Length: 235
Image 1: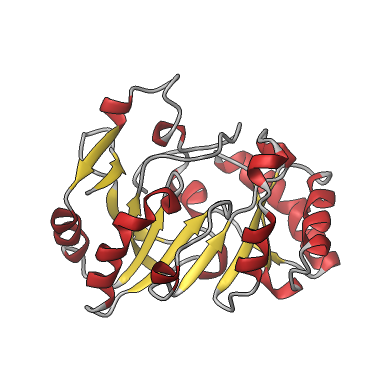
Image 2: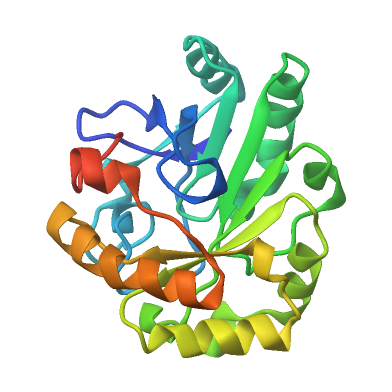
């Protein structure tokens, strides 16, 4: 069983779209949005997966047998799976059998994680790409919970991972530099992405962030889902 976020219509948040962010942006993908998170970002656009002061757990989360998730994922003509959240690593033990099943059927698996929970060896071998989204001070999380040295060191050592930093203003780049230098993260593993939940903000922040990326040599990522559909679930 896995705890999965619900869509507004009550169905589990398992849907077909395109990856909107990171190194694989634009790829048609089946998304599986898991519930629960160990952090609390002030700008989070999926608070319904973890903020039980603002949302009712019973209304926002559904527990589903793996067999039903397999059926729904396979109902789409796409073998690229993005597991997102929330924080997927909270449920990694239950996630392993699902990924094993799908990998045996030719799936490419991408996991989006905040990089604060160590993955077990059995899940590492099943993941084709790790999209790590470290949380800077702009997230509002304490450093003691958002910066776990052993996790940075582990993911930095994986050739199939990228670090995607959410940038709210130019001052946030100092936080990126601090982490990159501290953990010796190669330039080619770093992606900068604007923090935005609407098209206008996304475009405004993209203009200056692109220039910063050009100047410093980092990759830039937009947020296609915001550009195309705004702040809508299941898109």
